[in-house]
Length: 142
Image (cartoon, rainbow, N blue to C red; front, side, top):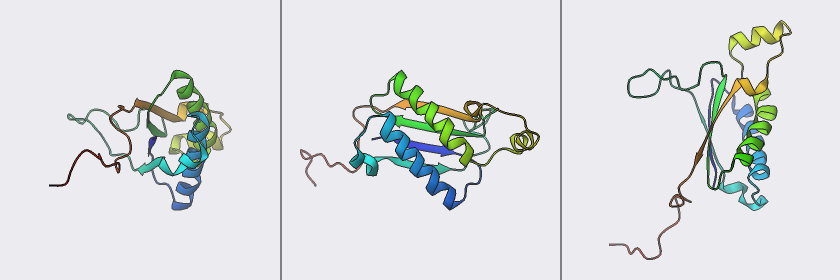
């Protein structure tokens, strides 16, 4: 089932609830899942570390973006990725706190493309990875 990680600066618990519900709805719709599968979607809110990578040279959120959404799922297609990205940008971007420079631009009436504020990363999950709570029936306890 899909796993989503939102790397963002401070988000209140109320905002997290609204964002999570929106992401669940988008995921169900764009990945063509059944409504009862909504409980199998995992969403994590992670404050971005200052840097990532071994040498510390790569920022967790790409330059120019306000936040990053990592989407890991089975059977990703380009069409699913495009549909998810389009809906996520339209619905989620207004809910996540803006970087100060974007806030100033908005106050000055400068319009920005929502897709530029969100960095999306899609990762295909291996068929071997499914529900971490599934127990192999052929494996016996020692």
